[in-house]
Length: 140
Image 1 (spheres, rainbow, N blue to C red):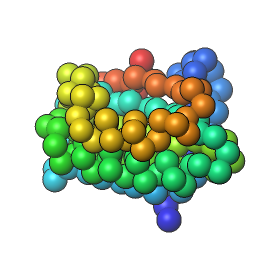
Image 2: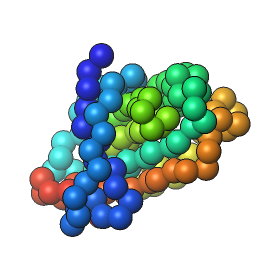
Image 3: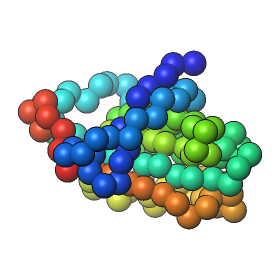
Image 4: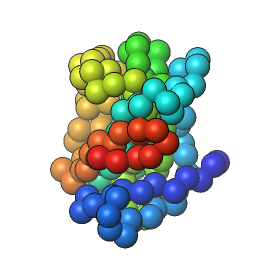
């Protein structure tokens, strides 16, 4: 499995010291063509905490979500899912053409099935950080 550094820190991902987590990439779904950075994509970093011992089960729900996202929603370019056993969390990196694509994504059957699959195991601790890549720089 690949490993990826995930920079998730609710206080300030840009101005403060980031929290760095290294974990295996368990799912990477991509659209046919890569999105050029010059298009100023919308980037969403999500962290979702689960009850101890349920993260591997949660990964199954996220697999369907990732695959459904890139197959059924125009504008979803990358949907990567990482499993963090240490913190009982699933973390995602989603790269979209725009925030409108995210609005469509959250209403899909794949999103509803993910909630049904994982809802009872979630602790309620979650984070979602919206970033914008502009001219090669990332900011909020």
